[in-house]
Image 1 (spheres, rainbow, N blue to C red):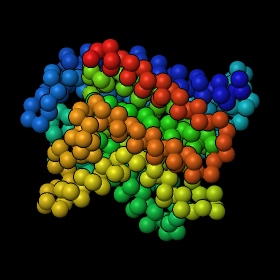
Image 2 (cartoon, helix red, strand yellow):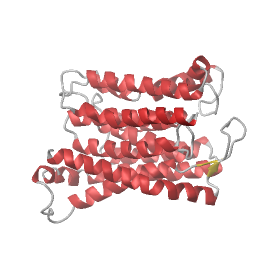
Image 3 (spheres, rainbow, N blue to C red):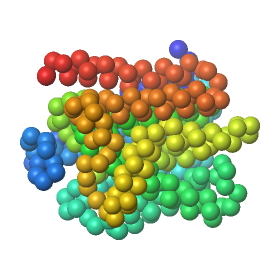
Image 4 (tube, rainbow, N blue to C red):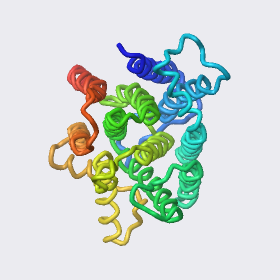
Length: 357
């Protein structure tokens, strides 16, 4: 086992451990404080269900990231750190502002989502906070620059893209397992491309996000004990938007990849967001209005259940990341094994679904 592979396994294990240790305390705290989703109106789940999945995922990303950054910022490298790993510490130190921007935006949107879950904020305060979070990425020099020569235009496009992707992921959080499963598949796709291109910083963050989502998912599907809430949906959408921007696509020979690959990696929210926005605007309704016209609802009409429709979303997401992987131009480095944890959890959940049916 190479030192880099061992480090990756350790990061993944740390993310899973952080999320796993917090999931039960978060469920109990949510119930105790009334941070629960009560079934009423268009909500048809059978019982009040705790929110808090976003805090589980945030812990899986923030704790390993801060520990890794702290290790890289030490005056001298500990002797137990392999040389093959420590040579990357300089790059981590250079990226410290980006780490803080990503985590700062993630924490801001998690807090925003928590308040929104509690009080149902109007659209404009939500959009304002999302613009601020996206602007933090721009200030840390995380911009969509692959095909945009003007820095100002790149900054505007970056903010627009982050806000769009954040809300698109909130849109698909409309059934048990929908957001968690799709986001886990997207994170694994980003992880594969990051490893293939040697982008170890992006790979590490994607690995942490994947670990948190894989801990959350069995608690949400098929029988939910915990919901993401807007706190989790905003967080996950923002992190995936940030990672998608950070990922390198253009090798100088195929600039189309900078446009096509992000759309493929985020295929489900792209389709759902476009479908819902166009359908609602055509009816003269705000795209931010709640409704049952999402991609999942349309699939559910055809297949007869939301659980099957959720698996349909997972299938679409899988197709997107597999096509993106095939078209990426990244060297085949064995990174495809990054898909295996997601596949294992999905297979396990399908068996569990049969046992609780």
